[in-house]
Length: 459
Image 1 (cartoon, rainbow, N blue to C red):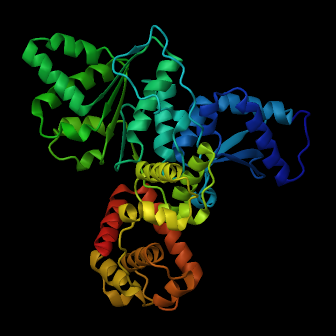
Image 2: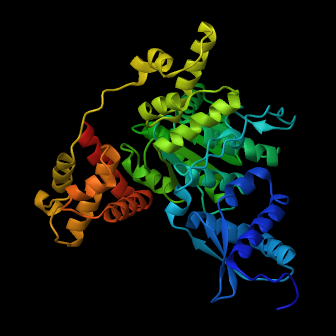
Image 3: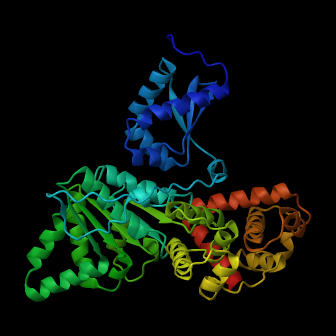
């Protein structure tokens, strides 16, 4: 190799990658950099004489490889003074999960839409990528939305369908795609509508004899954003119309982004051909944030509002609002409003008085024995095997699931959980929890099975 800086140890390669990131941050839009590069790390592969760029998942690896390989090579060459090959490597989820890092950019004053803007239905100004809270619980869905916003109709992610429960940010993301794309290309025609709006427009068009106007509106879109497609269920004529709209746009290379409250396969009352279209691109889910992330979200909001709220109050809210980011934010807003009206400081007692009846739900005590029995029932194995030494794959899986749920649903320590499973070591419990968490993240059917098991235990 030619001249350039001489690197003598691993830490210098890590520092070199940080310098590469600094270089690239000046050449990539701020939001794109935060989405694609922020969670990367650099190391050196001595066997291959190359830099290992670790990334959170395969999706990010593919996007960086397709879109930013030249920039990465340029950055390495500029920083190192010579060309060095690089390869992508998927990190262990725990490498990134160990640090709850929430990306929350302050809400900016939106710029007025250009005079030649072609937004047919108004988008909420608050729903932009700049103020979407990103954590490990929704990073994949957010990255997918950014990808299609950066290159609408030019990625394999068409359609993009984002699904998840109420209040997790589906509408925020789908409208953020519209805002971002419109700012990048003001002449693009962007159509946003809920499924109910699409249905209503179709019915009105039929009743007034203006079906041509209806098809012209939706089928001339460069980017079509449809919220809550599960409400197409049972509406055969609307499904027929949307099927042809989708086909026209897809075959014209236009981008379609959809949201739903569930995976397409779980939407009843939709035609098979429509379900097939919904699943033909990329399906990305939004998960509820864990306790650590919920606290971080609240803390970021208090920072934005420039108010100081005690940690025990943030914990109180986060511990009781477990599945809905919107509800988290609503509780904080209510607390701040009451404190302002009553001109009082916020403490745990005040929070319990203002929010207690609204968010505190009685929690049923669950024993490890109960978790073992119910898990054994679901996985069709003998409960006695939970504490036995036998290690068939089915028994081992059931045992790991029960350990995972014991840690999640009870206050028992790792040591206590291990003892309840035949005197196993705490490291065995840690391994079980990591294995199950990873499978839940990557296997939709398995995740549904565990969610149903957990719901049964909490019922």
